[in-house]
Length: 491
Image 1 (spheres, rainbow, N blue to C red):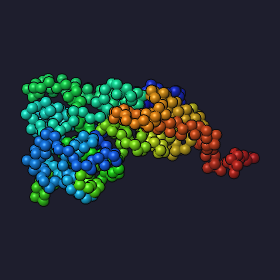
Image 2: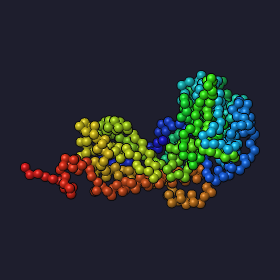
Image 3: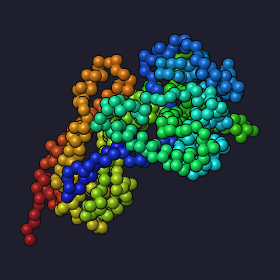
Image 4: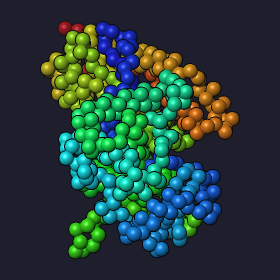
């Protein structure tokens, strides 16, 4: 999941450090994106059942190209059509659950291998896979004689992904993690383009006769971010013409078996991308899939340009770190790494769900100090993580409650609207699509922040009732009576 904000916690400095912007590694999920950019509501589905309008010329040309390439025929179960979300795949007849909808041969895939075999393959060696494919797409789009012309003509000029929003539209995300993520992503893309321009484009003008701008490259990035398939056998980043027209449905709750790569036949080495319908579909309805069950609304907005009303899509990422200025930095880092964490740890808090199980132990470790520092001694190295599962001391528990609550209040103060104001806007309806996304994302983030704050507020109220390490230790030694009093023996 993309990482957004950072605060540090230490016993010597319980206040918040400066919130930091997104780090470039937020792009590490780029290859894991399924396709496209639209979400289908119940009302859209009803409208989609009406006979589709005639195909526009670009879509007719695209279909004819696919027919000439042997990809489709009159028997193909689904066909491109204009749908309420833009373009989609509409069933030409009833389609059964798990039935193959279409198959696209490897010769029509756009992936790093296709780039390597192209005219610019030599100069793209060593580039990040997504950068090479984005450069290839950008170049082909600017070529009138591109062999991919009919496919490129059906691609949108932009999506509702936040990377394409205007400054005025982005202002509606003030204070949100999605805003900092979007800015970070655009800065990352710009830095990659700058290197690409200096190292590849300008030194090879004969290969890039058309002037390529950052906006051109950002378009290609947005296309990949929204349409690339992944999690396929041997393929981490691939565009599949025709298949990438398929839209998303929040009512489909499985990602299994929707698509795969398989052989073309028993005696053929040709590979096919095979797309199946995860549910039965009536003739005239859209064929739909689930893009990703694990993405938050912020990620859906960033990648595809839509959000869902499902509360489980609302999340907030707390990024915690062991401060390098902590006098016990080395010991704490060793303990964290021994338990699958590190100097920095990310915790995705989802609306309506409990805190991640490792969050409290990590917080207690980061805050450990003073009279509790004896637990960092080597004697406890093999058992300390078990001790951190439960409260260590009142001071330690109070510190983590105070700092987390301070962080939540600080984050909430950064938004320019309240949850109540967002709810009123949503209730009014008729919002522009991008404003609807902004209101939904920022309201969702705020609800999660309130949930976190309330959880630690409740914990603060229980501090006097909790059992801490020293009390547990005395009880284990049989030195605590039934009423909780400490037992002493006369000599």
